[in-house]
Image (cartoon, rainbow, N blue to C red; front, side, top):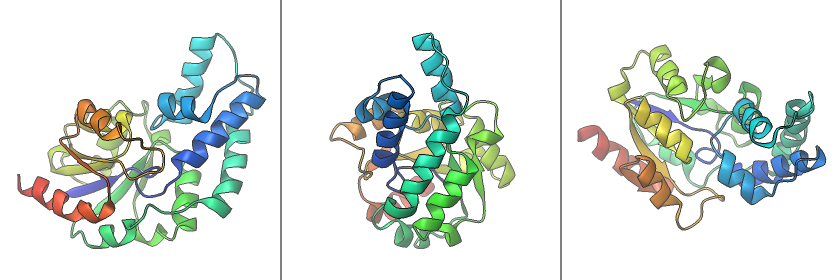
Length: 218
């Protein structure tokens, strides 16, 4: 079985930080957003798709340098403030399966996130939504990761914290575990992940090994 991990909100506790900065930069560009609204509307969505949706819904054009400005601010804050999800390193090392990362973030952000949280040595294979035509909730990224790792979709188990990510895994024909241990997850988040298609939901990484092995045997 191939384990496919999302990055933000699964490996690193980045979502509260990134949503806050995203809202700040959008507001500075004349498009007022709160961190809560960003989290609700764009968690698990690539920046490219986020920009397209905002521009379409609001009938505006964001500045050409929006992505550059956002990443510059975000990367600087990650260097000092980003933390790993509690217990994630031990949980990953306890699993006997091959693994990779498949994230909506750009490769530079994924690499930075793993480096500053001390997780980079755990993953030799990292895949980004920039490598496929459609980001989550489309299945493209997970199918790309499986193909590159020589795994059949039905032999893959995805760990995801976002509704879009769970929907993408289901659309790809993969098993999926929802994760609610990130700082952005409220008390109703687990129910939302189940409604999106996750048959199992965990709140702590200490639960991952047992649930993954149960799903593999099922």
